[in-house]
Image (cartoon, rainbow, N blue to C red; front, side):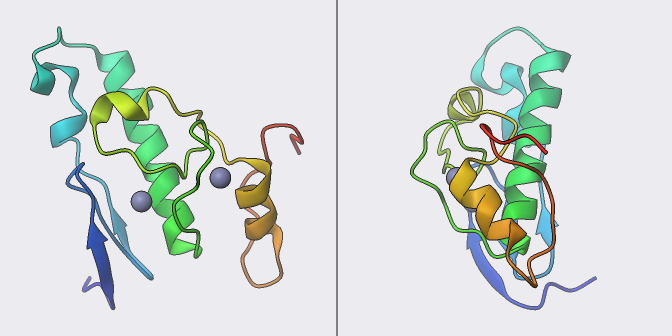
Length: 110
Ligand SMILES: [Zn+2]
Ligand SMILES: [Zn+2]
């Protein structure tokens, strides 16, 4: 499947565009940074990156809330600081007509 419009490449080796997102495991592996192998941590990072890229496919941009899953993360370790959910502002954006309903915000679980 060919991406229609490629917007940027993140430092995680992740590509995203308007309609297709691709998440790579390569730099998410703890052992990439010399840490011991940790399948749980790798899985958590992958889940956050997939949710982040899904947010982009629904039109979200990077968020200033450091714990929001849509916050930019230049290093894999920064992904660990984020929650596996959207902040209220990002969740509200996704609730707008035409954006679909993906997940609730931190303080307003649905
Ligand atoms: Zn991003
Ligand atoms: Zn946010």
